Image (cartoon, rainbow over all chains, first blue to last red; front, side):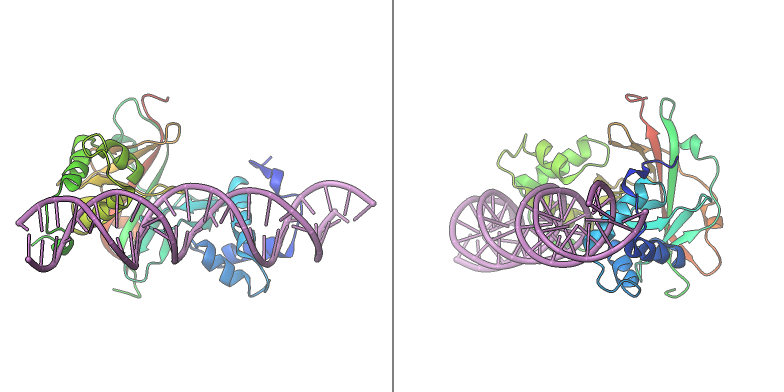
Length: 129
Length: 129
DNA sequence: ATCTCTGCAAAGGCTTTGCACATAG
DNA sequence: CTATGTGCAAAGCCTTTGCAGAGAT
């Protein structure tokens, strides 16, 4: 009963490998990062398959897209908990944060119907500060 | 003494036109939207010039990039006030919001140095709800 | 055996860049 | 007059798609 399950009828080594990468590395990844990591267990994996698999996982509700201004989107495994992100402007990595800000509804004027929200903090991560 | 003023030594009709579009239409615009609007006062304006001008304005600190997941970035004139955005998932437009959430520092664990933050609300705008 | 999935390569969008001409200063 | 800015077209990413062969069931 997940969203659009239609395009995921078979279990393959490539999909397992890609799923494993997302579950092992717990932060938003670019398609290229996914390819490099997943090739360690599926050496001749192609980039097109990574894109197709990301899209399928996304439509199944298993992956979540994270936008970074001026860059291709990253994707992360959609666990149950709601959270936000930190973008390090030095090393360019995106980290997942715990917790969620409150009172965001107050930001929208009357007439706007809020269905979701995203927060991105920007700065220096512990490695780069 | 603005940021990288280096690439903006001359005033031209194209730049004036592009600047006018951003200042007149007070929400984040895609390069294509900018081209279409700016051509009303600079008819044979080219897309490459729009991109070059956006980049130059951005480096001068006059434009701010707004990311939308899975889409090319939009740009808006950077006025003095800090604010956030609302993305209508029906008509796909991005609107500027007034006000700013508090307590966002609490989201980042120790060790992360926060320099800025962005908030995007998602839902239906008054026209689409 | 069948129908989905994959890899490769070609095609598509968006953005950048090279170059000769236009033009602000 | 000179160096910057512009338009056009070509080139560069990133992403998607067509197709024939591989592989799951």
